[in-house]
Image 1 (tube, helix red, strand yellow):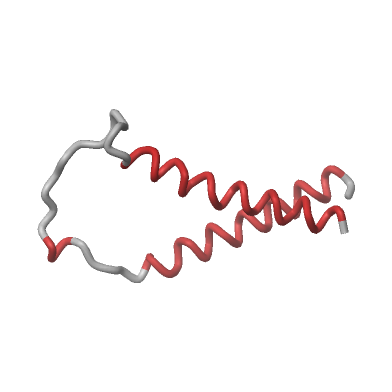
Image 2 (cartoon, rainbow, N blue to C red; image 1 turned 180 degrees about the vertical axis):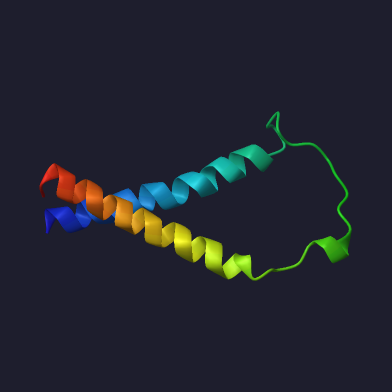
Length: 73
């Protein structure tokens, strides 16, 4: 039971850390953000919008599983 909680926590931290970094980077108070005008036809969904998050989540789960096994839980 404890390893399941640890695995879930590891996945959650890894998943949300990328989102938090993005939100911090695009916030108005960030030194990285600046105004820009992007034409509407350049902003659309692509095929990689489905594939990339799926591969990322799979790698996070696999990595956290390996970490749990290495620790010996």
